[in-house]
Length: 107
Image (cartoon, rainbow, N blue to C red; front, side, top):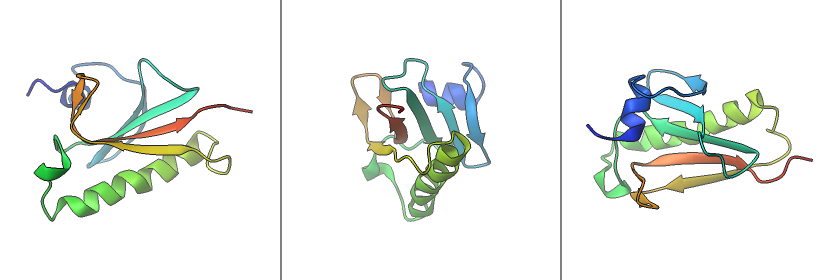
């Protein structure tokens, strides 16, 4: 598969990992748009919500749950952060579901 996230999951492209288990990988964005900018992705390739099946419901919930752990590990859990779930083609770069964890300003 020619998906950048699949290549990151398979260690074909290096990343600064923050969290990893059998289902999920979280890593710092190589081109951050915020002081904290972490991508949380399923290891199962899911291009868009319409491609999901019933089993993926738990996986999507796990992505959100992992964001809590990542925020805690980064010391931003109590400060608040933004979660964005991107679906499908985003800025013509990535065609896969992923969750962004961002903090716009660190005080």
